[in-house]
Length: 408
Image (cartoon, rainbow, N blue to C red; front, side, top):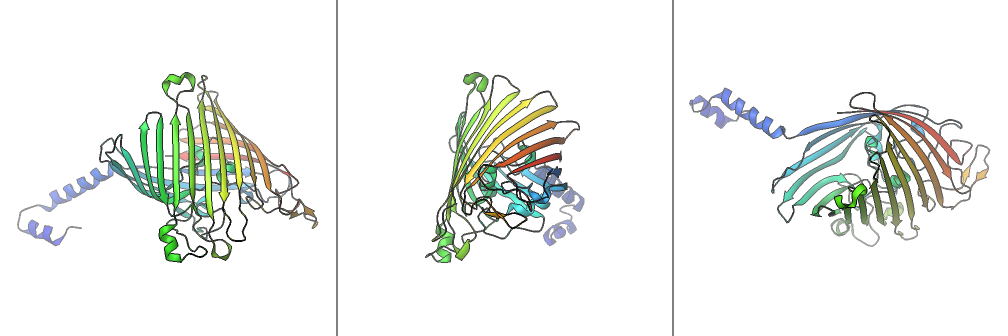
C-alpha cells in the first residue's frame, strides 16, 4: 500500500507510481533473495507381528498407535536466511511442523505443559547474529533445538527411522539465548540460558516450593553447554571425526504433582568416527539424566547408551545398524508391575526399567529427492517386566517399517 505522502509527491509530479511500485518490489525481492525454503513430507507404514497392537515403551513417534497401518508422520517447512561471512551478519530460521508428530513435540517426558493437539508446532524460530569478536561470535535468540543428542527430531536426518532410547530422555528444544564460538578449526564451544530444561514455547517455571511465582520466573533458568572437538587432517583416516560433550541443567517448565518443579540435569557424550575405509563410519552416544527430588517425589535417574555403524555399500545403497540400551528408575519409560489379560501380575512393582534394542535399516535411493528405507527393530526387556503389547504383555517386540520421505 502506498502512503498519503507518496501519493502527494506523485500528484505533484515529483515521482511516478509505476517506478515506486517497481522499486518497492525490487526491495522485497532483494530481501527475500537470500531466504531459502526447504522441508519434507515424511510417511511410513509399520507392522508389529504377533500380539495385538499396544504399548512400545521407549519408542518416540512410532509407538503402538502407529503400528499395523499407514501413517503421515510430519510435514516440515523451513524458512532460513543463514549468516554470511560478514562481521556484522544477521539471519533467521523458522521451522514449522504439521501432522501427528507435531502434537507430541511440545510434550515433556516428566509431565508439564499440556501437549499441543492441533497438528501444528513451531519447532524453531530464532534470530541469529554474528559479532566481530575474535573469530566471530554467533548469537541466537528465540526457540531452538537442544544442543545435546546423537539423533534429532527429523527422522530423515538420522541413521535409522525409529529413535533411540536416549532420545526419549533428552530435552528437545529451548526458548532462550545461545552463544557459539569457534576457538580453532578443531574446537568449538556453545553456551546459553533458557526458560527451562525443555518445554512448550515461552513456557516458564509455574511454581516452586517456597518460592513466589514471579521470583521463580526471573531467577530460575536452565543453563546449556556444549564442547565439540573435531579431529584434524593430520589424524589420517579418522580425520573429520568429532567428539561431543554437553550438559543441560535447569528446572522443568510446567508442573509435577503438587505444583512442584524438579531440577533436571542431562549429561551427554557423543562420537562420530570416520575410518580409513571411506564407506564405513561408526558412532556412539551416552545420555545420563538426573531428576532432583521434589519433596516426597523420588529422583528419576536414567541412563542410555547406543552404538551405530553405517556402511555405504554402493552409490545408492546404505546400511545402518544400531544397538541400544536404557536403564532407569520405575516410571522412566513405563510403570512396572503390569497385569496380563487374565488379571495376573507380571513383573514386580517398583522395578527399574531395563530395555535393549537392535535396529537394522536399509536405505536405497530409487527416486530423486526421495528417501526410501526399510527397517526391522527388536526390543527386549532385560528383567521380569513384560512391557510390550496390549493384553498379554510381552518381553519382546518386533516391528517392521517402510519409510518414504520427499525432501525439497
